[in-house]
Length: 278
Image (cartoon, rainbow, N blue to C red; front, side, top):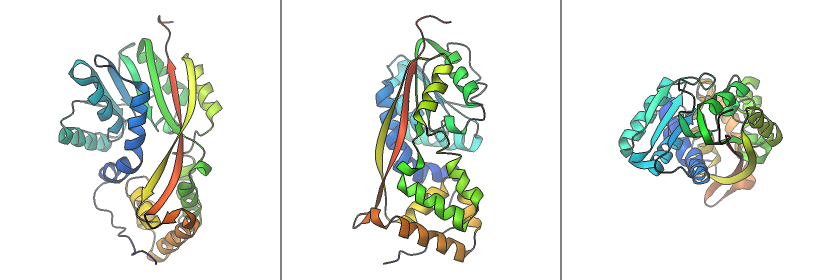
C-alpha cells in the first residue's frame, strides 16, 4: 500500500527539525557510543567541535558533571540557538560558542578531550582543523571523532542520492556524496589525523540500524533537518512523487511490517597527544 503523501511545507527551521528528526534516529545513538568510547571523567574539560544542536556536548556534560566543563562550538548561530534551547529543557550546563574549526577561539592546551561527530568531512581545511584540535588539547589529551563510511554501506542514503540526482538535480545528490559521505576512506582518515601530530591513531568501524515508519517518512525527516530542505520543498509535486516512488522501489527489500530499517556505518577515530607539548 502506498503511504500518504508527506507534507513538504516543513514546520519549523532546519535546526529545529535536525533536533526533532535527525538526533533521535541518527545522531543521538551514535553520540552515546562516541561518549562511551571517549569516557570523559568528572573533572575534565571537553570541547565538542561542529556541535550542531549539541547532542554530543549534552551527552558529555552528563558525564563530567559539575566538576568538569563542556564547550560546544559551531559556525551556525541558528544551530547553536537550538542547542541552547535543548540544553535548557534538559537542565544541562554547556557553554555554546560560535566559531570556526580551522581557527579555534581557545588557548593552547585548554581541553582534555576534543570530540567531533560527523563534522570533519565538512571543514574547508581538514588538516588545519586537525592541527587546531591538537593545539587546544593538553598533554595526554584525547581526540574522538567520527566520519561516515562509504555511502554504499548505507543503502538508504545510496538510494536517496540516486533518486535526488535523477529527479531533483545532480547538485542535490552531491550534497550527500560530497558532504556527509565526503571523507569515507579509513586510511585517508587515519593519515589525516596522524599528520596533525596525534599519536596512537586507531580507526574502527561501527554500525547501527536506522528505523523509520516508511521510506516516505525517511525522505521527509531527513530532508526537513538537512540542506536538502530547500531543494526538495522547492520541487513540484510530480517531481517529488517520482522521487518518493524511486526511493520506495529501491528500499523495498528493507521494509517489513515494522517499517523501514537499513544499516549505516561510521568510522570512529581515537587518538591522543604526547605526554609533553612538542
